[in-house]
Length: 478
Image (cartoon, rainbow, N blue to C red; front, side, top):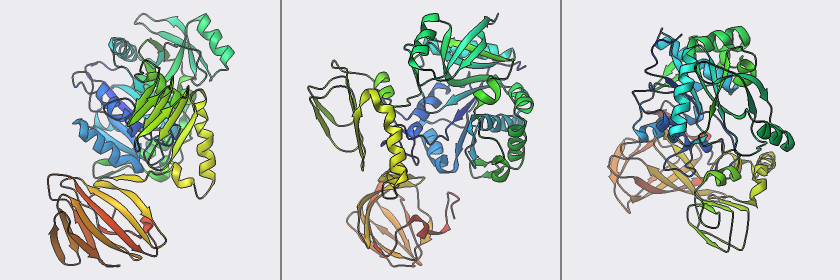
C-alpha cells in the first residue's frame, strides 16, 4: 500500500463530448471547458481543487486529440503545471482512461501512489465538508480500498445512480453493499426515506497499483489493450499519444461496471458537500445564484415579471417578460427555449438536429472556433465568399500554409500583424490590408503584446478546413 500520503496524484478526465447543455455546449467545445456560474471553466475549477502542492502532485489529464490545446491553454491561464496530458485515440469509457493514467504514473514512479480520479465537468463546492471527505477517502485508499464518493442526496433524483452503504470500517467510510441503477421516482423516494443511500458521483480515490491489479483480474481485455497502448505510446510536443490500434481493442465500459461492482475492495465515503454533474439546464439553475424571484442569469439579461427561470446568453442581450419556470439559452447561432422541468429533453432535440444534414453543424461547432493560436468567428457566408473575424494571441502565429481553392483579403482592426506572403514579410498596423492570392504560401503572426484582430474576406469555390495545406506548424499539425 502507499506509504507516503503527502501527495495524491489527481487524474482528471476531460475527454467527454456531451451536448446535454446545448446550444452552449457542443462537441467541439463541451461543458467542461465552459464557465457555468464560476470565474473559470469547470475544467479550471477542477484543477483549482487539486492545486495545493502540499497535498497533490501535478495532475495527469486524460483527453482526446480535439481538446489537447484547450486543456493546455486553460491550465496555463490558471498558472497550473500539469504532470501529463494523455491523448485517447478513441473513446473507451472510464475504465480504460483511468488505467492509462495509472500505467503512465507507474512509468514515472515505481512506488505506489494514491490516485484521485475527477470528472472535469462537475460542479463542486470545495468547502470544509469537501476537504474532510477527500481526507477520509485518502486514508481509506491508503489501506487498500477502492473508494467512491457518495453524495448525500437532497432530493429523490432519478438522473443519478445510487450506492447503498454497508458495514462501517475502522478508518471511516463503509463497504459498498449495493449499486443501484438510475431509479424510477417512487424507488428514489423509498431510498431517501430508508437512508444509507448516496448518489454515485463518479469520483474516486484508489491505490494506483491495486487498481492496475484489479483491472488485470476483473477486466483482462481492457488491461491487455491499454497496457499495450501505453507501452507503444509516443511523445508529441507536450502530449502523450496512446497507441491507436492497441487502445481501440479495449472494451467500452465504465469503471463502475467493470471494477467497482465486482471488486471486494469497494468502499463508499459519505460526502455532504454540494455536487452536481450539470447534466441538464435545470441542474445549472439549481446550483446557480438566484435572485429574489428564483431566477438564475448569465450574460446580458433583462427580466420582467419572470420567476423561477434560467436565462443564459453568451451573445445577444436577452429580455424575458411574463414567464415562469422556463429555460432560455442563447448562443451565437441557436436559441433553446423550454420548460425548465423538462430541460433534460434537450438531448432529444440534439439527436434530431444531428440527423439532418443542414442542422448537424449546430451540434458540433460554434460560430466562434478556438485554436491554439487564438480563433475565428464566422460572420457572413455566401455562395462564393465568406467573412471571418480572426483573433491571434500575442506571440502566437498560424501555420505556414496555402489554399488551392480560395484567395484571402486581410484587414487589420486591432494590433500589429506580421504577414508572410511568398518570400515577402511585412508588418501591418490598424486599417492596413493585404491580399493573398489563391495557391500562395502565407502566414499570419502577432509579434505584439496585445490581441491582434483582423477581418478576413475569403473568395473562391470552396472554403472547407481541409483546403488548408500546412507546410510548417508549431503545434504539430503540418
